[in-house]
Amino acid sequence: MKQSVRVLMIVPLIWSALSTFAVAQTKTNSPLPVQRQLSRLGLERAWWAQAVINPSRDKVEHVAIDEDVVYVQASSGVTTAFDAETGHQLWAVQLGRFDQPSFPAISNEDEALIVVGSTMYGLDKYTGRMLWNLTISGQPSTGPSVDDNQVYFGTLDGRVYSYNLKKIHRLFEERRLPEWSWEAEVWMYKASKEITSPPIVDGRVVNFASRDGSLYSVTALERKLKYQMETDKPIVAPLARLGDTMFVASEDSSFQALNLFDGQVKWEFTSGLPIRKPIWAVNNDLFILPERGGIYCLDPTTGNRRWSHPNLTHYLASLGGTVATMDVDGNLVMVSRENGQIVGALPMRRFTVQTGNERTDRIYLATQTGLVVCLRQMGHNFPIFHRFPDRLPLLPELEPDDNDSPAAKTESSNE
Image (cartoon, rainbow, N blue to C red; front, side, top):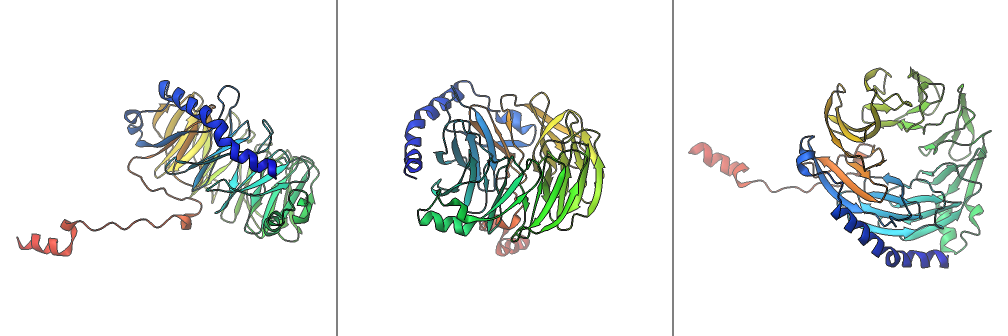
């Protein structure tokens, strides 16, 4: 514990000079798009910022997003958090030792959870304050998933673990972590091979896939097996969810929509190519990216194909009537959400760290050296929340213009 706290205090001092150097480099040789270029696509730059990173030895490993915070994780173990709307740096902390393997951060409304090496860290997402750290069983193969009561993760030997969040907090307050981490364990479920993606959870069931081609669904509290489904080849792409529908892709080129709770197949789609990249379910659109097959937009209710593009390689965000994507040449490409027609493109070749955003209508891109840029639709100062619209803060009520008041309208009609 003492060592972790000391590292947290020292990091801003050690890395401030490195961050300043990186910002200076950005200003002298900026890859940032200018407004004249962006306006052609109906976009504007909301903000840009520099993550804390040593550009001479480190690179950005992960960029994770929620409605409030953007997390930039460097290979050194330093995570930098930015306000998702303003780009203001909230905090930067060193987690674990340099160059330990890590997984993308996940979060709920209050905490950010990050797995580095064999340790899971719980941080206050707004301040970076350490809330707890837990030594996890086995060698993790996935990042964590979390619901209101428990946190889950998978391991290389095919195990899925569940830990009680309240018990974790209590053990930490009693200064019994990480030594007594095992006391917070609720259950363990053993599959035959490596768990390939973070579990899909909703508080009632936990669904996860194994490299043996099996999909498992167990109850969240008792780990009772509800159903098991097998595919001909491994399930490698992360599972995705939209409402009570779960989407599963396997390396035999099959893609299925299942009922989250009973495993009944709603529809199937065959791409002809294996699907290994993440699946993106946003509003009433479903995006899949087969290997060397471009991008497909499907109807999530029926599985019918709406459109496809063979040269697009990444889904970035959905912005009203358009979809932001990247192509094979490193261009930001805006596509009509309705029919797939290309609206326009913009070179963004140095922004090679591309992460999809299914939470809001913002586009986030980063360079390997930690330069982060946020793009939005022109004039859209307030974000649209896709997954959790109820979390959108109340917008300020504007005073009516004098000319729009009833009295003004009456006077105008009298004239």
